[in-house]
Length: 390
Ligand code: ADP
Ligand code: MG
Image (tube, rainbow, N blue to C red):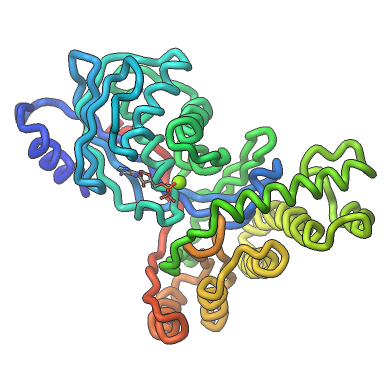
């Protein structure tokens, strides 16, 4: 929704506001991870960019401590107090927002309540991090209502805390970092160990990032995710027996891993080989992108997909099909599954002129092979969270 429609919708939901009352508006983007998958919980590197789809909030301050939050995506109103504990049986989605209030309060930021309308064009649960966009928008909305600011890193960490403690999702730092701190026309190489990051230009008008949703729901994810994490821990334990400095797979190189291979369970070795290789690929991708060497970027994306499919075993036939079909289109540099796996999306790097042939091939062949329609959209690297009109 554009600002005008958001304002109209706000007044439909909250009709008590006068037409000339001044509203605040904030926006926070979703994201796609270009490369560096299953590296975050191994203290490694990820390489996300903000997409040009956002969660918007328009709001007006209140003179008490109540938050009234209407979500167009849920078509539901939630009400809670900024102070005090969670009320009985709140809508589950509103806990993200309450969690953000609590996280901000713990960092010394609080104030009066607000009436808020939120709208998004990020699909919910589609792997593009609508949850982080929602949290970051909420944090920025409240801070701007209170006339306060906070370093964006702290805001991102507060939102991650909310997702851990109020939504029960033990996510890494990537989603909230990129939503809070993205720079338009750039992707972000983020070091999950020390939270340092580098913004790298991705603004070539001849090049495009395309996201393709397989429309396979990732239901296996929770159990498999736990399983992969414990396999990574087993690999660290095996490595540390020879190399005591190893604290995480981030500290392991390919020659070190090969040296210890014989003492490792073969499946654990494969999992570790993915993580060690993927970390290097994320670093190499950043260097290639800096040089605008898109062919090299594409090769790294294909290698990442193969490694996730064969060594980490988190792909599925539909994602493999989408990657194979993309590879057949001239002008496509590379493609890979993105996100945790077992469904969700692939991400494609392509020449702009290849986008429409890519769309044609996928729309024709994917339903024939997998019995589903793909969801396809091209995106530029968008800006991070911001207050509109400031
Ligand atoms: P993803 O982050 O990949 O979209 P998640 O399962 O992590 O998927 O987060 C989706 C959840 O976040 C939704 O089920 C809902 O609870 C919450 N959410 C995200 N955006 C909104 C929104 N605009 N309005 C209400 N709830 C939202
Ligand atoms: Mg999420």
